[in-house]
Amino acid sequence: MTLSILDLAPITSGGTAADALRNTIDLAQRAEEYGYRRYWLAEHHFTPGVASSAPAVLIALVAAATGSIRVGSGAVQLGHQTPVSVVEQFGLIDALYPGRLDLGVGRSGQRRNELAQQGAPPPAQPPRIVDGLLIPQAFDWSQLFKSPHLAYQAGLLQQPGARTPDFAEQIDEVLAFLRGTHQAHAVPGEGADVAVWILGSSGGQSARVAGERGLPFAANYHVSPSSVLEAVEGYRQAFKPSDVLAEPYVIVSADAVVAEDEATARELAKPYGLWVRGIRTGAGAPPYPSPAEADAHVWSEEDLELVKDRTDTQFVGSPEDVAERLGVLRRVTGADELLITTITHGHADRVRSYELLAKAWDGRR
Figure 1 (cartoon, rainbow, N blue to C red):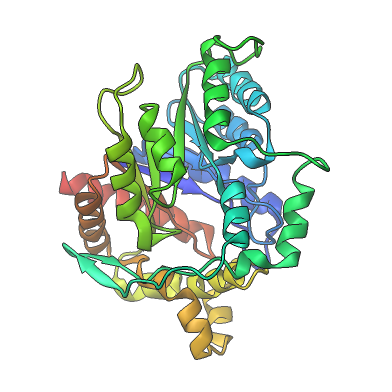
Figure 2 (figure 1 turned 45 degrees about the vertical axis):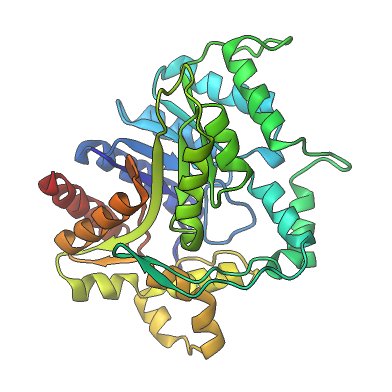
């Protein structure tokens, strides 16, 4: 199967973090049954609607509850932890569940700082269609990341006065600890059968680091759809064969909601825009609304523009329709795999969406 899952452990309105975590365990077990290749957990902090704040802990729980599916992070934020702490965490899990772990790492913390310090961004390109795939106008994150509230939260994730090293240096240190070539030895961790992935939203440093070190790369169509082609191109241009990969290997993420028919899928997907609005106003992802709560929201033109790139690039519909459109995403980006995120207010609807998509995708093959 060339489909995998990215789970944020969403907390729905009226639900609790405990509910979200139990749902994650159940969904991981169903994903293994449906044939998905990987089950990745995100890292988010200070978000009322997301329970995946400690991916290594959640990965251990998922690995314990499943038997064969690969389990990993999408992504550990290296700006908040040292390389040795990350290697020790994943090495500990690998000691009990060897050969099943993907260590996906990202530089989102560093990226936020860069955007907060930059001046006016260059003019955004208008939306365009590339060989059937919508590439929307880019969202401007720079003003949001200048928020004192977000800066305060970011400060809580590090020790006072801590300095985050260059991302390339951090990746090299992670690899050295895993390979046993570091001056110090991480136990457990050294020699662990853990696959290192780099996640990125642009053709910048993350893509270059992944390519230059011959590591697999994950590009975000679901978070930053405007720059997905730039990201995969930057990675492939920088790629050098390694003892890990002889050729580039790319996974591309996408948001999707699938139901038996398009009308039902549209109803289930209604809350998505309201949820994204919470993120982009700086409040953090709220508890995921119900369709009725989404219907009650009065949208302004400014609100609609705020979330347009995300709502326009969500894959919503019947199994065959979504599978076909995801096929376009895979073809245009040249992805080796697709990483699917599905959030609905009802857990059974989310499980059913993944089940229907797996069957339709397998049918296309």
